[in-house]
Amino acid sequence: MKLFVVTCLKESLKDVQDMFRQANIKAFSVTDVSGFKGNDHPDLLSDWFASGAADFNSSMIFSFTDASNAENGMRLIKTYNEKSSDPGFPVHAFILPVEQSSH
Image (tube, rainbow, N blue to C red; front, side):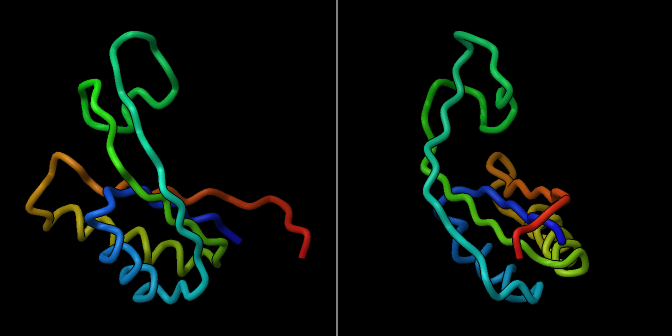
């Protein structure tokens, strides 16, 4: 089992949801995220959002799924970013291993 996590600007949310469905990921969760980046202090997320002190209204979409679905989702996200007309705000995707589960 994998945890497939994607972050994107709200303007891309529908596209990302469509990619989840194309990757056969039928159950997923969405949450709103406000991302901030400033040069005042270093933090672990310093490269997460574009440079500048502005905040960005983003979404995080995630699902616990099997490895093949997560790989398909990653492939779709990479293709989407390559074809994007706004390369300054790419969709970020991560595949994380799930070591244990309660079900």
